[in-house]
Amino acid sequence: MEILSVRGIDVRLGGREILRDVSFAIQPGELTGLIGSNGAGKTTLFRVILGLQHPSAGQVQIDGHPRSRRNPLIGYVPQKFLLDPDMPLRARDLVGLGLDAHKWGIPLPSRARRALINEILGAVGAERFADTRVGHLSGGEQQRVLIAHALIGRPKLLLLDEPLANLDLRAGQEVVALLARLAKEIGVAVLISAHEMNPLLPVMDRIVYIAAGRVASGTTAEVVRADVLSELYGSHVDVLNVHGRVLVVAGAAEDSDGSAAHQQGHDVVVPGLEIVS
Image (cartoon, rainbow, N blue to C red; front, side):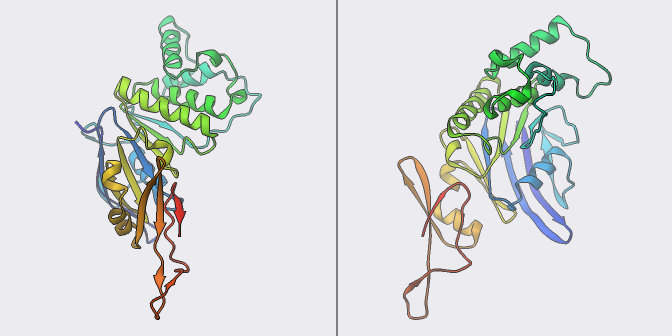
């Protein structure tokens, strides 16, 4: 059974086409990268999946059922989560809010509740700073706490909006490894929005590559190819693998005399990949 099924999604806002015929699916335990530059349509697609944006056409299903707002089967980690460093909210308190966000009043402590919070903190490697104020944690530590907050309700789909954007290289690698492990161990389907593809390459089961509101989806080998990306961008590119990194070579146009010329204003900039022209 597909945990997430996106079929023929179109979105028009203010008369402008944002997404066009977007289709892909994610299976349980898969880690999928949603790769695209700013303005490509990633945020709009996330809003459609979360039920915050109605598409002009198409359908989204979660675990075989039409998606709805506040679907308990979806866990979500936003890109921006600002906390006052002086706010007396510990890591374990924030994780516990994932159990109580839909309830009114102050949650009563219980042995089972504490055990569940400790279990999920352990699963993300956050036990040692469980009693630290969230505002005092590093970026990588905050990401672990936010992931625990999103997972404590036992969702089947975990969406993360640019989780690596503000992390250093080491912290980013640790978060990617954690998400890959969680996907395999607990069977949650993970969809990560990102500009940068290369950090995800070692663990990505599938990729959804988005450009100008259209997508190409499949395995990395199926999508990260010159013919596929050239069609997606509407301009020729070459794809090279060098020392484990993916390089994209932007083709040059020719002048009327047949000599190669730089194609001013039409360079192909592929998100997350080095560009060689």
